View 1 (cartoon, rainbow, N blue to C red):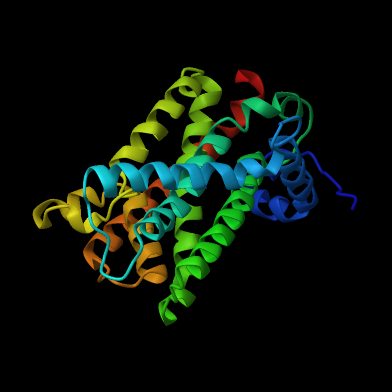
View 2 (cartoon, rainbow, N blue to C red; view 1 turned 30 degrees about the horizontal axis):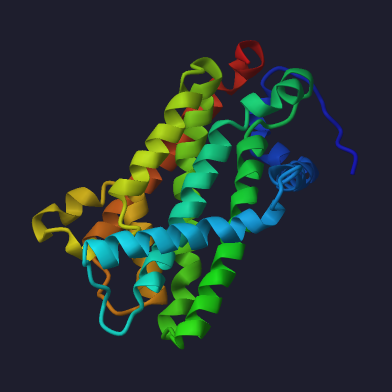
Amino acid sequence: MSVKIIIEKGRSEKNYWRDLWLFRELFYILSWRDIKVRYKQTVLGAAWSIVRPLLTTLIFTVIFNRVAKLPAPAGVPYALLVLSGMLPWQFFSSAVSEASNSLIGNTNLISKVYFPRLIIPVSSIMTSLVDFAITFLILLAMMVYYQFIPDIKIFLLPIFIVLSFLASLGIGLFITALNVKFRDFRYIIPFVVQIGMYISPIGWSSSRVPEKWKLLYSLNPIVGVIDGFRWCIIGKEELYLPGLLMSVAVTAAFLYLGIWYFRKTEKSFADNI
């Protein structure tokens, strides 16, 4: 596909969202490149997408269920409780990490060629969707192993997949724009992601949080996503609606902030990078 580029004052601002569609082929190319590079020259290759969630599920099950004696809802294997929480968290953490470093990793492309820079962080998130799909297949296999059949709420799962994508996109756009100017963020993000794993209800159910703290706890946008995933997949506990609405509101705020700050600083990327 050939794209005709007209350079004139104010054109990129006026036609920015139209240009995103015109450069869709570049989006496909970058997404496919990132997927291939992710496991290039690794010993296990794509098997890491299977080993990592299984090993994490095993560790969390032993620590929280066998050692801490935290129970799962009646009739639900604890491993399913953990993996249903690990599924959105793994996507969210991986997407934020990939997006936050995406501009720095494409320095030559940014400094030489015009295109809407938003394509880069969005395409980097696509690699995380591949890992998400593989982990979801593991979850289905585990359901078959435990002979666990979800109810009709499983068909609402795409809503929470979209919500997790928007949460990671908003935060990722904001951080990657900051990372261009302040390179310290490349060291801060892994630490923040690690802390986030321990303060999110991955290895345990958020129903353990005292009632008076639940709404405050839901300021963490991934809490509502994890609860939504478990509600759709396991369906043994009621969904805490005020917490979900809080997570949606925080996600919307981060998405607006991320797009706004990314667009505001986009013109300076080539100079600062």
